[in-house]
Length: 260
Length: 260
Image 1 (cartoon, each protein chain N blue to C red):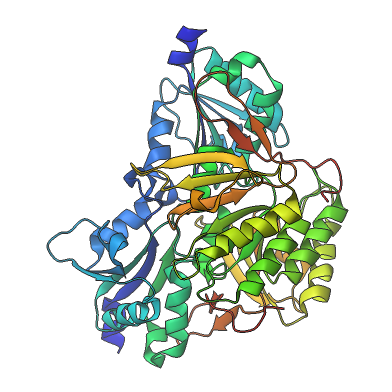
Image 2 (cartoon, rainbow over the protein chains, first blue to last red; image 1 turned 90 degrees about the horizontal axis):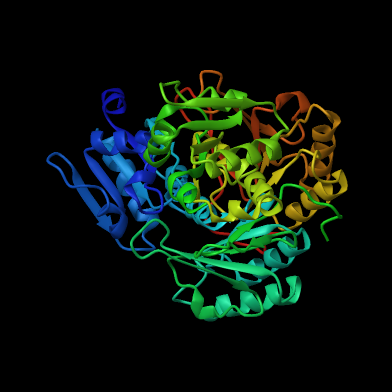
């Protein structure tokens, strides 16, 4: 076991939102040293193929099996990267890896494991739009694959009451396409129709698109699984530019009232 | 004005938490093309000096004046980077820049402005600890310089009710050192003494330190202005490792109950 522990390692890495220029040097170094890359197929395909690297792509929703495979490879002495889009710690592979670690072979706890952060979709989208997350905010996964819908709705209402800006991952799950429509209704009721909402799709890729509207005007079809949705707080502001180009959206650092 | 607009630009960039290996290539390129670097003195000092680059360091709490200076330099045809630690959109210079832009010279709105994301302290700390932000979470600035303390307390209570994991920036402001003590009291009351709390100081720098304890054991002195504090949700778990080293902390992706 000791020999294996010294040779193999496992790094859960974030590839950022898409552009190469948003991958940290730390992650690039891990990718170039790995013998095995494990992850959801479209993300594994972002790791350039090379001699000595085996890429193991798997389907969506296979996170635990994938994590177990990665842990076993590392236990067998391989140098393994588990790849996620964005940041691995935000609705991605890091949590799944630790779930598998806790439930799995005791020997796996001896492994050399690291999590290497990446630029999350939330930060990349926010930067493109201006600074909508410039004050207190929350981040909610709108998919109800792994939690009851009632909890999502409850969190939306409490987040609105706290006057957080909100970033939403997985706004439209295939299993429940009506979920996002319901989320928009809850938010309209809690925040009013004038509240700003932003849709940032595939930021930093050739498919990037951005749009800014209000809850009153927002349509469920404006989001798909590649869209990061941000809803402003009551303080979030829009700056029209005199030149062509989308307006800037930002949430000021200071709050004058009580924020309710 | 048109000539100036074509020549100058302004990029609000994130330098990440400290390590060079966590600076994105996009930000490194901007730093190497800039004629002027503007920011809080300790952050400007992280930009390597070179011929053709003027570094303008300023004091803390001078964000608006600093943003105005940067906008004017860009309007005068300079290539300006405004530097923040971490990500510029999370309690950093991007919001201040847009505040200054909205209140300032109309001609500034013609400028070529971009925000370039960085690895935030929150993501870096979370990666070192495991995956404590692996499920829904919120992010709150505990400084009451720019918002009333009552609003902070209200957000803490609502975040606890929503069962978010929580990331706290600026836990102890010099102006109000008793704030964090009060925050801990509110959280103890709302989440109970067994809830996990993590202190991640100066992550990725030589001064890095991590500690994990419970709300019942936490002391205000465990945090300073360089500490990112994370409080787990009710679901957050700890994995003891059989080898030496700190335990892993993670928040699972699924929720069994209603989360209350």
